[in-house]
Image (tube, rainbow, N blue to C red):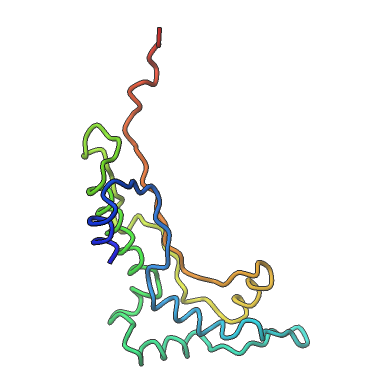
Length: 159
């Protein structure tokens, strides 16, 4: 939907940043692990929670049919990185950037996009993070479209 929305209804808008939850599988897995975070309690130094383990949440996602055939594409952030790169390519080619030539736009290769895996996420980590920041753990993809062309006015003397 973002491609048609951008092209058809926002043709004069410039996009400089992208930030979002681009992989619903990781969001669902993390939500199932956290369970009802408000019911998290500590007893005797052990963290108790009402959510699922990573394996249980992954199995539920598989039963729903939303996990990629190669589950590492979801778990290790490859799916979100591919979507993020596609968005960057589309947005940089469909908007008027203040670049002398379109060739100045460089989108990094997929392998160069930083990714984090949710494979090591556990209920204790999620509970600890929520206690410290009152924020839920999510896999957020983000990019910034920047102009790497040299500024033609830099180094010039302006009389």
